[in-house]
Image (cartoon, rainbow, N blue to C red; front, side, top):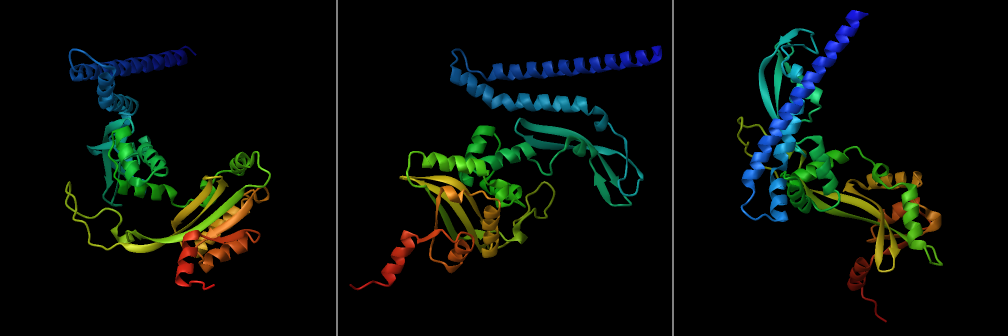
Length: 346
């Protein structure tokens, strides 16, 4: 019993020493950061804007160094790993020289030294520290990607790219914003991203408040051709190490994006309910509408449904099949075109 207690005490002492060493190194990093802040501050008079701008410009140097220090202390044994069993053949592999990797996070760029293991028999290599840390493939990590997607789903890609760089200090191009958004949306269905029945009912109730008649719930359906990159143009291109490969020659493809939107009419404004737009076929759009119908997301009994389109037969077909009691309307601009092409003589 005495031996067990002694082992527990030694473990506690060892953990305490490690914590003290970590805190000491964090304090040293903070002191070095303060020196940089002091050197960057203008002299002699300081305004709040100058202090804020200086600290904001240097903030990621501190947060990234803190994160890197914690990682090194927490996973120092994994960084010093000398052997590893091959996941396929169970052979014992010896560590090769550590390979540095820099990853981008919202708190700054973090460099990780990872031992590399390669099996000559299975022709596969591994960085076990990447798995331990849960690193995502590529330079940008999941927190950066999620923040970029959150912004790109609210504003246009160009605007999202500009705002993201200004707010985070990280450069993400509009093309990258588009790619990340597509990756996040892969496999999602309309019912996965649509508001709940309760949220939609609340919006309907707000518009209906003080009115004698039920509010108008509009279903707008349309399609448009958009340029897109072919699959052959996606992904990385082969090239010499540390040099940008020459871009392959390709011409964009025109594909039809179809979608629908439900919204409420509230005087001169509209209240968004849900929408679903993507490059898809007519049958895909019909299936998405069917999912909305089957999920019972639309309170058809508390609103008057109106379907609006450009007169295309496929639009009217889907509205009639799923919402037979809806009032179908031809939109004003297409109606004007038809009247202009076929004038009525009174």
